[in-house]
Amino acid sequence: MTTSSNNNSFVRDGHLYIVPTLTSDNLPLDAINDGHIFNITDCTFNITRGLSYTDSRKDGVIAGNTSAVGQDKFDAEGYYKACSAVSNNTAGHIINPVQTARLSTRKSASIKYGKVEVRARIPTG
Amino acid sequence: MPSSRPPTSGTDDVADDVELIPPQPRFTLHSDEDIIRSANHSRTTSNAQSVDISPPISPHSVAFSIPVNNPFSPPASIRSIPMSETPFSTPGGTPGPSSPFPATPKTGGSGELPRTSSFYAIPRTTSFSGSRPGTADYSVTSFGRSPRQRDTFSSPPSRPVTIYSSPSTLKLQKERPKSTMLVDSDALQKPWLRKHDTASRVAYFLTYGVMMLGVAAAALRCYFDWQAVPVIKGNLCPVLHEEFDSDEAVFGDNGVFFREVDMSGFGCVFLSV
Image (cartoon, rainbow over all chains, first blue to last red; front, side):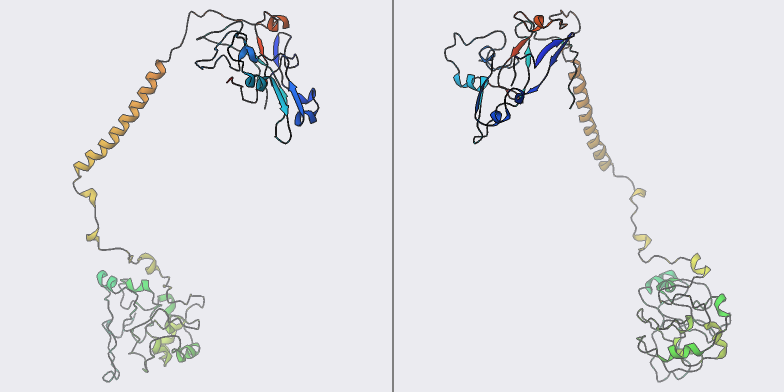
């Protein structure tokens, strides 16, 4: 589960932090395991259409902003799958137990060929 | 050493008319081929003189070509030790169960010696060289000997009493027996002395040469592909330079980074149908 929460991605002291947290900090553990419907806030499925902008599908949207508005067919199943989760003990489904963040520059910058320099600290383990 | 008769094939000189002539020894002392021929698990004895007592005969000793008068006489260190006859009356009296060959009823010194022997005739008692079944004087010793011959009975009791043991003499250590596994040296093949087959040489080098050619071609291909990789070296324009100064600049509405929010994760990405 990737969120827009400031707990998972924030800037401090000139550094960008991407931090994973547990869903059980927000939800009780019983709810994660059984009998809960979880809807994530600020779901961006309509914008990203479930595609990363490095995907090479021919009929997919490669980059830029897209929107469900104007589409001929609304992908309801994909939307439900990408923006919500249902926990059911008998069926073996749970709410995603870990929350983190996914960042991209699809709105600001993109290149085809070039050089990327990153200074980052990788988590241990 | 005193020898009373020449070491030829022995025949009895005492009442041998009626008796069967024992099998002749199948080897001579001075030729290797004969020794090898007769070395196949048979022990024969030469006719020992009355004074000498043969040393323990082993398969090795058969193949020896010991250039002495009597090859089966005990070594000089043993010959001079006196000993009594008493311990030998009992082994002399019971040769039957332990030795397969008959004890010939010969008395008095010289004469009949057991020509054939067997590997399974191991003497019971810790006897010495003279009273072994395989030695030349076995039957002679059991039926009374001259007192002079008792000197040769003495030997250290710690000597191993097996028919396979060989006397640990200096002569023995110097003259190793010829291996029975060797074949006739004329039958050995020495291909390195012959002229080399040029066709096989050519085939050998051709095979490995073409192999090396393939390896070299692979190396060349790797190198050329490495060189052909397109690498942008110069004329790069900076597209994005981020310092993460403030949260607003990074994540705001006009921010650089866009947060993707969905329920994917753990390596899976939801694809639209």
